[in-house]
Amino acid sequence: MSATMNQMTLKPVEHSEIKTHNKLVKTYLIIGGSVIAAMVVFGVLMLLQQGGAIQLSSAAFYQFLTIHGTGMVGAAALASTALMWYFLTQYVSLSPKIFMTNLILFLIGVAMVVLGVFSFKYASAWTFLYPLPALSGNAWSAVGALLYLAGMLILGIGFLLIYIDIGRAIIKKYGSLGKGLGWDVISGEKSEKDAAPPTVVASTMVTIVNTTALVAGGIVLIMNMINVINPSFTFDPLLAKNLTYAFGHIFANAIIYMGVIAVYEILPRYTNRPWKSSKSFLVAWTMSTTFTLFIYTHHMLMDSVMPKWMLIMGQVLSYANGLPVLVVTAYGALMIVYKSGIKWDMASGLAFLSMFGWVIGVVPAIIDATIVVNHVMHNTKWVPGHFHMYMGLGAVVMIISFMYYLSKSDSDVKPSRLDKIAACLYAMAIIGVSGSFLVSGALSTPQTMGNTLSGMDGASFVRRHIGYLLFRGIHRVHYALHPLSQISK
Ligand code: HEM
Ligand SMILES: [Cu+2]
Image (tube, rainbow, N blue to C red; front, side, top):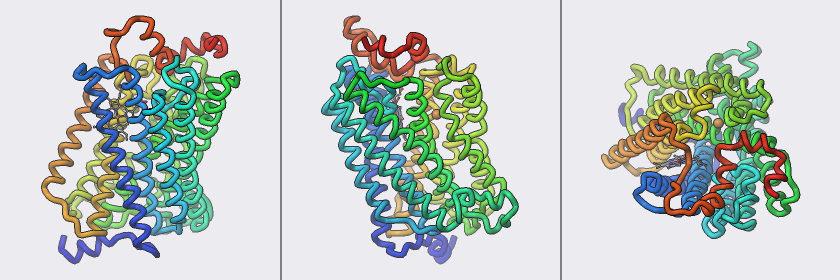
């Protein structure tokens, strides 16, 4: 690629007030990136504990687990939202004020979550499954639970504002969210060449699913908070679990659907070939939009009291969910790169690598969503095995690729050999972590056990773990023994 072409193809996205907007995007990335890096430290500490190299109390282990899960999901969502926002402003007019508000709410929420976890020992894991926040067996106080839950609520409100603004902007420009997904092209009303660009399609999808997720999450967070304040207020645990996973699964899943915008925007700039929305591309995204809303039920495959049709749907749709978008995107990426004379650098190389991470991460995920397999693999290390692969090697790599792209198009910072070495080490680390989780999972190692029984008397073990046991694994017994009020008495 010649120097002039380099300049031409890597032109930054134009904003009306380019400086302030880019500054905000950079602030998002710096905060998101730093939190992800800090959370790796807690991840490594947990690995050391699980490997017997260090001795953490179980309270500390579960606090680390809680902060790691919350922090990783929150920070990756924050950074990929910035990525989406940055590219989407080329097509629609978004509100920088709301973009700023989300960042402020994020920081407030994070401060409350950190305080709740580290000062008040809150440790329910990031999924805060009812009734665990209130029923901790004295592991943490109501204040800790309230700080955590309210912090999450504030975080959620910030994100919700952004998606509402994005939805508004897309409707204003394209007419409706359906048109943002290209339904006018799918129905033949409009020709393929006038279809909404991939970035708009992906953003529309994320807006639809994440608004749903955040509303579900907000409801269950508030119900949990009331239950913590007044334990005589109880609600159906099965409903709570449905709402919780409708939030958690969708919100975590949407990170990669925002991140993939980096692939749609960066590879075309490097190859000078446009990435157009074809009909099959649009159909794939519509399928993912619909299915993403329903497949959280794959988290409930062990909940025998769930309607059977929902579980079967969870299995079938889990197959159908990620695959279409993955296929059109991986195929599109290969086609756009093929014989293009692309110049590989950090940004383009990582954008390409992220596709690989996504592809290999989805395979074990789909295996686990199979009911017969899930009966064996549920709550084993197989679970963190699959999501670390597509989060660590897919979503986070998309974010890092965007960071390199932005620093190349927007500054004079030049990557050195160290960057390549770091990227290789990072990829190997993620493959190592995920691979070891998958192997342990296949050997039926339970997920998320920090401590063995050794060094604890039976009574304190039971007291400490009763909440966690409720949370992880024995929902079946739990629902069978229901009603809940009897358990808490
Ligand atoms: C080198 C980097 C990382 C290391 C060493 C690491 C390590 C760990 C460990 C040891 C666990 C506990 C697994 C278990 O026993 O169940 C865990 C859980 C988790 N990790 Fe990571 N991780 C890393 C990167 C990531 C990334 C990039 C993400 C997401 C963007 C992520 C999200 C999570 C989540 C959501 C959980 C589950 C928490 C829960 O069970 O509630 N991790 N990680
Ligand atoms: Cu899921």
